[in-house]
Image 1 (cartoon, rainbow, N blue to C red):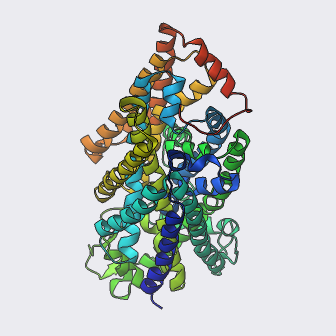
Image 2: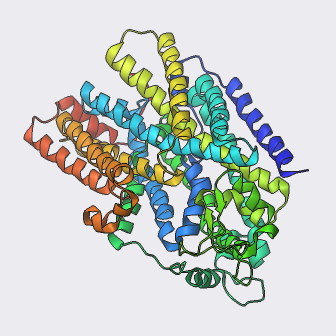
Image 3: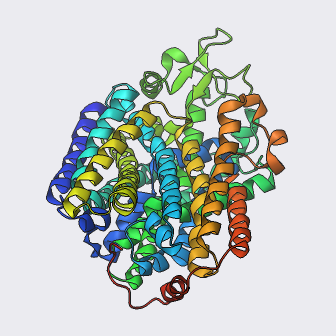
Length: 570
């Protein structure tokens, strides 16, 4: 069978499974819609959390970034993994003890303020829409290549699928769909990695293949070969970095604390019965995530070697375009690969120097095209398409739930319409989810950057807004509502303004280290926003009245990991 037939078959079966789960798990109460009823098993929640957290950026873009950036791309690997550890240790059990439905719920009650709740809602929606744009773009890219439709049509198909299980089943539908999506995405990621590792190094475990000798008779190790190819083509050695130490530190830290502040991941810990289960599910999630994250550097290295050798040929003089492998023309149709014959020799050639380079290759395709570049069977190529879609859709659904619950529960129920019935609140939650799907789709069709960059911005915004307020809210009872409000406003305001200025106002030539504040790029500026948030929050809190005694008692109680009830309304 052809790749396209296999794709229709495997992607169609996976979509049928997701829709079936959505119908089976449709909900009738707000508790099921917001926290899946609060009785999810820790292992199930760990698997769902892993799928929720490993987005299109993890599945599609991360290996692509490492493949093109080499050592510098490791900041994404370190930041996202370290952030999950922070989340598991510092936030998950305490927020679960607090027992609310959403992050704005925590902010609103901990800081005894309607204004603080609304500011938190704004931050949650802003971060979620920024993040979901990247996911929907990823869906469009996968559909455009493997179903041979344009990216806009691909995004619309993705919107329809997410609409089904997010609107029907809320958190309950999303949880069980994410379990299925984790199984699909991890199988899809590992199968080609194992195939290619065995073909190139003789090791079936990609992590071992990454540090092994190539079996092409050259006697070179994989990374030695990559260093040589990179320097020969004008790039820095693959194992050397080109970013400044301050920028690397800030990007890594922004990704770490941003991960710990992401509202769609935090809310997953409200779905388990006990505080102990929150810790346990965080551990399970870390295990499930580690399988993909420790494989990504190997996938990146395999893809880089195969791509250069295919485009430039074994002798590094260029491959005749008329003899180009099929994957080049397949990806050209999507616009994600472009060839320009600058010297009219009829050959493709890849080089760092723009005057010599004739290939424009989007880094987001590296994982998806990897099986084709390595000439793997058609069913493996189709499996990767299903995995990419599972990763993008699982995270998109979690983000859309945050947006819908912020609107229906935090804004309507808790601020403007406190007397609405549960049935009305559920209706508003579904309407809000549908609205969020439409906006997310538009952001996917007109994205403000390529997938991983957009996601990196979302992490910076989450770091600058939520992380200090949540951590201080748990561990520092003197922080009051005025400190929290002004901390969030100044933190996210500074970070968003910096990112918008360098990414959307000045031209690309001015977006360079010489013009950045302390040499910190827009991807890492969330750390400065977080520091501003923390300083402002502390200064304002100590300049105004201390929190009421019942709030200080509440802060004391949530640090004791016993006696929590189910997640509930307040």
